[in-house]
Structures are given as structure tokens and as C-alpha cells.
Amino acid sequence: MYYSSVISNFGENVRYNLSITDKRCAMQESTMTLSDLIACKSLRYARIIVPPKNLDIQVTGINIIEAPDIEKWAKKGMVLLTSYYALQDLDHAELNEFFLKIQSIGITCLIVKIDRLLKEIPRVFIELCKALDILLIEIPETTRYEEIIVEVLSFILSRRERRLQLYYHLSEISARMAIEMLSIREILIEFKKMLP
Image 1: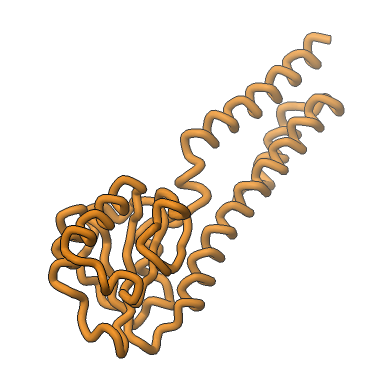
Image 2 (image 1 turned 180 degrees about the horizontal axis):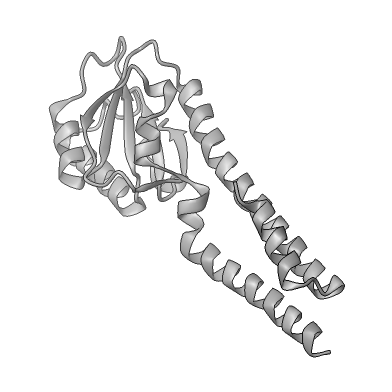
């Protein structure tokens, strides 16, 4: 009876600690960082125009700017892609307002495609990225948005999948400990199997 109670309490502690760890580390475990983003194969021909001060900032998603109303759909940690088409008609005050939205939302990076419309990133755009410490990356016309989007989302989803597998294994061990009353040695063997 005592052993069963100890095992049950241990299992509850594992689950509780996992939930606490999940709350503290959810962003780190399920996302990429700016460092990971810069290393993406799809960005091999990119140029960093404004480097970030902190490469450990989390990237939670990626999307394309089709209009300046990003407050309707953008989320903290997002990377935004643009050809500047949606921003070309903004005057200086409107561009400032757009960047204030970027800052308040918590956008981590802007990727600007240089093409027929835009031969170079406007100086004011670069200065605003510097002032707000937003990573600014320039990509050539030959780089496809789809490649970047697929690589970033695949990275994020694979991290989430690994975390879910870990939770499944720990839950499975915890249940076995309670039902089969595993010995300490058997518990350690089960945990050792989970190590890479």
C-alpha cells in the first residue's frame, strides 16, 4: 500500500513538473530562434540588413504582408514577408504607425524581397528596424516565399512533435509505475531508454 502510494505520488509529481516546465519553456521548446531562422537553407542567398541584438528571440510563425492591417492577424514572435507592395503607398507618418503596430504585436523579423517593384529597401524602413531592434533580411527575387514558409513551419512543427512524444513516454512510464509497481531499477531503465 505504501509503495503504491509512493509510486502514485511520484507519477503526480512528474505530471505536475511537466506542466510547470511546459508553461516556462513552451516557447523555447516549440519554436525556433532568430539564430535558427538565419541558418535556414531557404535564406542562403539572403542578406542581413539589420542584425538583431538578441539571436535567442523566439520565432512562433511566419506570414505574408498583404495589407498594413497586421493587427488583425499577426501574432507575437511572427516573421513577416513582404515585397513592399502593401506598404509602398504609406507616407512617413503611416509607416511609423505600421512599425508601432509591429513593435506592440512583437514581430521578430521582416523579410523584404527585392524585385521589379523594389530595387532596394528604403532608408526609412531600415532606420525604423534599427530603432525598434527588428531583424531585417533582404532576399533576392529568385527566392520563393513558399520555400521559406515551409522550412520555418516544418521546423516549428517538428519541435512540437518531439515535445508531444516526450510527454507521451513520460505519461506511459508514470502509468506503468502506478499499475505494475515498477522497481526503482526498472524505472531508471525506462527513463534511460528515452535518452538520445
